[in-house]
Length: 95
Image (cartoon, rainbow, N blue to C red; front, side, top):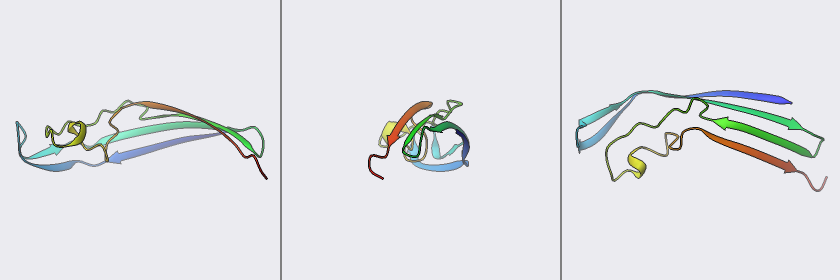
């Protein structure tokens, strides 16, 4: 069995919105910290199970306030959905 704990930090960002409503010429987006947890177990040389939680602390993405941006945030940089879970089963069929 193995465990994984990883952290991600996105530093403060100055977003140039070009006059976004209420944001002024440049909005400052505070830094965000994400904590991910995972567990894995190898049943044999060919079978593995993994489960985990991304964004364990349920950190939300900042709102930018520009409707031209997907989901009103930068979804390529921040976790849009907050906390998420995964389960993975893998098997090697041929050796």
